[in-house]
Image (cartoon, rainbow, N blue to C red):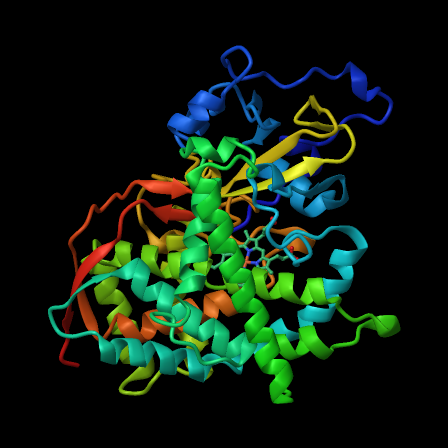
Length: 465
Ligand code: HEM
């Protein structure tokens, strides 16, 4: 699957050691307007704007009112940032967008603090620990199936948001919640965080202290979310219960040299995981079923696999290795619709990438949504073709596919998410037919995650198995 090339063959073999960095040119810059640079283009069509950038090359600079950006449009450059030299590129804090909401959570911290937190939490995400949640994932998926009536019209995005939130809170926080009622606050917050970052909302470019109605609404929703997280933490503290889960680790774990988390770190991580762990997986499932609803052949093959491997049984971890086509369907859905569609990093010292000098302070962007459909690396990139992931079918370079990021900061929840998606698909795909009622090629909102603008609506019909 992976094309291995020698360093000399790569797009970015790095600068020769003896050449001073200042002698390298800046990357070509996308045409913009005086003062606001490319802001207008980004607001108008944030995803389509990347097609225009690509006409300048693989390393392209653009200005907005918020920052100077440089888009990196080659897998070798992505690899360099994420895997080879992560210390020269720090997390982008999104504070300029008013989104410094959980600054001491794992997604946002850097350096030693990140290392300590990651080391503390990593044991919660080993294969065995993650697999221990399989039965409850299947149970919640089966309950969702039991709730769906024959012929019912559903918004898949809402259904999967509720399901993944239940799975997450049960597995990581040992909490039973009813996301349709008591925890609407979490779903509302997820929507608000996304709207806050969507460049198509002009308010995105206004500081959070400007009292626009959108900013005031955002602050209210954020406060309600934070208070709810505090309540959940308190609830666990009062119960004296020591479950084998992430919340216990956050509250009680001791790392090397007696390292424990501060109150702010605990709360910020609760907020981080509650959002990062459900919004992403929910979208992954929504897009998987959006695609399956349009590809009868793939759905039929999935069902044949499920009948052969599972028979009448519920899926368990024993079945996982044999659910190969299911795995490929998920891999392909995350290629076409990566829920995390772009990574941002701030350059901490001048670097040369692809022969261009990138000054300190620049924000580099690594766009999955664009690289995952780059025809230099994928045949017929817009086609849904799970079989492209059969070993030896196509040679896809590392980092032309990175839905879970890469290097030391790759997604800590990747195994959890992939397991959950696989089990949920195995439960629901054989129980129902899906008739798509909404746009087969929905418009997408690029917020924190890549969401469909409108509900993905289907009519489900029960299958007699
Ligand atoms: C389909 C589902 C998911 C996708 C596509 C996804 C994607 C990603 C990506 C691309 C990153 C790297 C971000 C960066 O480098 O800036 C990331 C990091 C992270 N993800 Fe996920 N994720 C998913 C599910 C989950 C789940 C289920 C959890 C928690 C249970 C989770 C928790 C996190 C955390 C805490 C980080 C930060 C890791 C660090 O910086 O050390 N994610 N995720």
